[in-house]
Length: 156
Image (tube, rainbow, N blue to C red):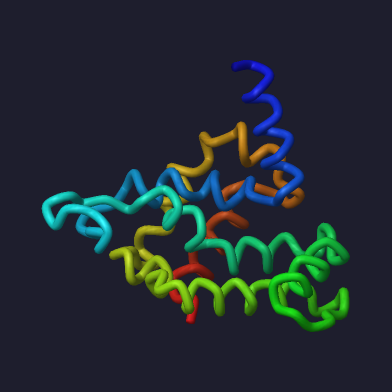
């Protein structure tokens, strides 16, 4: 199990899922009223996959400068067209928004019942997630995390 856990950690860091996962805990954990269409009407639940993907456009926009080549490559693979390094963050974020919209993912944190007033609590819930935040290529102090949450309020 230790080896599997270590391998997963290496995968998270190399795949760029560090911030999306770190931010997801407070999104799911602070849910007040959201009920997913895929679950019982009585269950207030933001599924893990939804809480992870909802911030992805803002996360990859924020991390693009750390590795523009990788971000451009992923944007090209997912979007099917050539992307310049300097446009990598915006291009990848746009491609992700298109996928999320096509998949019927709710339109940002607002659609899950959050507002800008919730950003400090969301940040406070994310900061203890050191195991995934510490492998991020950008600063994961409160201010950058707050900006990502704010930029995730509406995706489309």
